[in-house]
Image 1 (cartoon, chains in turn yellow, purple):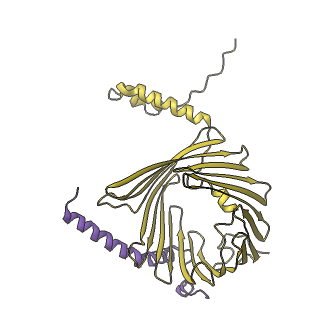
Image 2 (cartoon, chains in turn blue, red):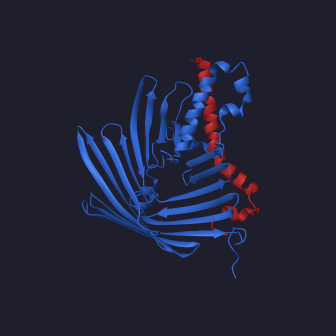
Image 3 (cartoon, one colour):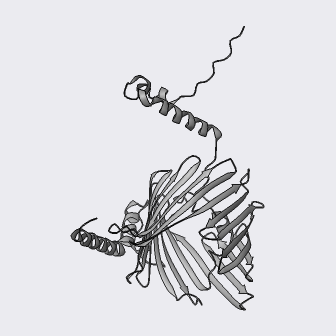
Length: 348
Length: 51
């Protein structure tokens, strides 16, 4: 009679730390360790995927829509890469002739290595913005974000910590925290994968503008990802009676479409805005087009003539208000590096 | 609750830190980038938009 093959025994916490089972100090609480261990094993067996962060919940939709990319007037961005590893680049950007914002010049610098990311920008008025990220481990990142201006009251500092577990993500954030009286805005969010496709989470905001006033509000999030990750649907409630839902789908390698619905149902204000957009990634061009239920139609074309020179043209027509915006821009990337130094294969 | 004196000191420290950050942040990034870059770039290329 053949004996059955030995069942592989999974290494438990008690095997890993033999002193726990032998040592008398931990004996009284070893059932607790056991239970935690079994729970952790059971959780790992589910093989749940990482749900992504709360901040990036609607990232796919936002990069498909052009609301974050549209500009008007003329602009030029001159980017200079001075080093690839570690990353170091400086940017000079000019913008003029915009209907909504005055002409501006902005200088930016980025430095990034595997652990540290530094970013800074200064405009012609002397307003400085900065970001500092430090990765303690790849899954645990602390972030600092500042905005400093010459005028008092326009300064902002934000401290943030991101932790990504195997099947959950956790984020804590504080905006303008005051060590003296505890005022500021505090955010906490948690997103957990429930099944392979569904992730649920919540985000709490605690506002304390003055020491006597404080307010806590919680919003709930849900994210459904397609099994082969080519579609994502999200929903988010925001405070009292605001619901935001998005749907993103990758139709092919080159085409992505996204829809967004924003519902506001407050006692004195009821409205809904729907935005539908598409993004085409062609070989040397990116084209985004979208329209929304307020009657705005807009498009943005980013054409790369050479890898270092891109031409942008954007337009928006507001049919309800009978307004239009047009923007043109150039993006020039120059580099002092040879192709070999940039990690590209040598040209024949 | 901290005393008035401590509070004043904290406010002063924050104010100084803010000023240092305001004027020192961009130079810090450029210094860090300039010294850690591989290969090290020339200074003129760093500052001028056209070089």
